[in-house]
Amino acid sequence: MSTPDPTPNTDSPYSQLAAIGPKPFVFHPTTDTIEGPAFSRAFQAITWATLLGSGYWLLSLWQQGKFGGDTGLGGLRAAGWFVLGWSLLAWTSWHVMFSRARLDGTGIHQTWIWDKHMRYDELAYAKLIRIRGLEWFMAPRFYVRTLMGKFAVFYVSSPHVQDECERLSAELSAFREF
Image 1: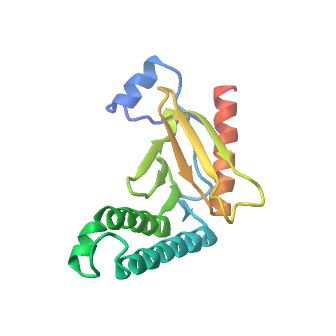
Image 2 (image 1 turned 30 degrees about the vertical axis):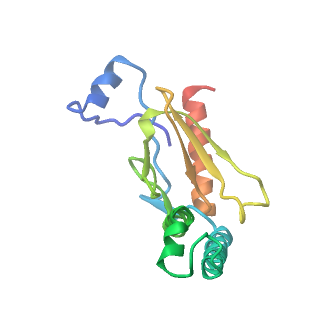
Image 3 (image 1 turned 60 degrees about the vertical axis):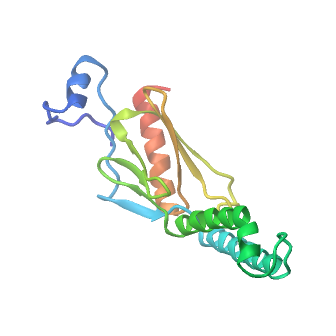
């Protein structure tokens, strides 16, 4: 339920700003913490298949000497940019596998290559964007924007996290009277 906190901490700069501005938005998830994977298992499988397939292709090109060198260290050195690109793909695939979205008492979080966090009291707008029926392939995105215009996109593939994001969006919209 979106109600102002009855005992604000007057020492924090947020509470001092709240005293001169509009009341901050407060959101309480249905449980203390709601957490789920950011990406679906099908998307994770596609990501790993892409990683392994491109790795196999890169290895076979290197073994055939297609990078302008031999099949030894010289050929590997010539393939440096391709190996670097594959390494970035592997790094991203790792984070796709272990990325989690969480709603708790303080805000929305997602573990990612760089962790994302957005506090509830800073939110001005929130919307869950998804293509129904394709959630298995494309993770729904929870788009949020702050009062200062900063925005973030959180990936949420878990149905109970999606439901909570929809509830947050509806309560924020009613609170901000959009």
